[in-house]
Length: 247
Image (cartoon, rainbow, N blue to C red; front, side, top):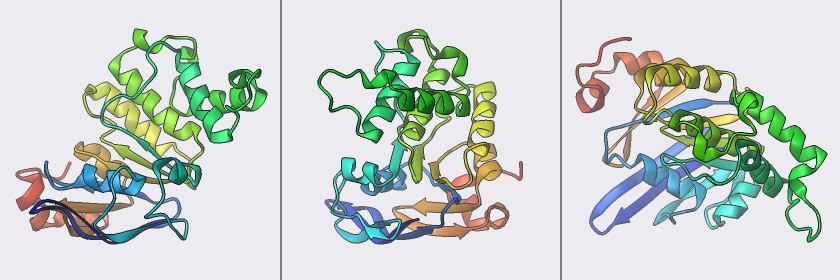
């Protein structure tokens, strides 16, 4: 469903991704681990089209999308949530979800129509709000809710575009233990036909939701395999996990 082939990106003499090859099957949940500066976010920026790789290619559902713009990749089913909130603070939670659904459906072009009130958009908003546990908060302004709720909304906006593949960049960053547990439940409840690629530092979440673990170090893939094998890898403990023991 999503594949990279020898993806390489450098900034001057620094290789931020170096020959990265990954292949995610439909419905796979893969977590990317690695220390700060390993190239994880730079990899995501290349996958969605915010950065152009120096060499290599990116394939989405069998199509080469390496040269496509961000918007074109999104229309083909690639969506992303960010480390930092990118929300419309002056709108409600429901309106934020509705805007994402409207754009994905191509309903935002009419001059006199209010696409947020179309039956199709409303239904999508209801479904997505239920998925990310925000149904009781649809009328709340974004600027009135907590940081944790905003993180949930980021995931909801990505889901409202009806993606085939969703990339999540540290979805539990900055949230407390209880909210982190809520994200565990949210991620595990996502439809199994949705392919999910996550950058995460929360070890409990990573090993709880992942079908596959990939570890980057200095821009290179140094481990790619099952979570149980990752737990046993001395290399991972040496370069990333430190004194971390089995949870």
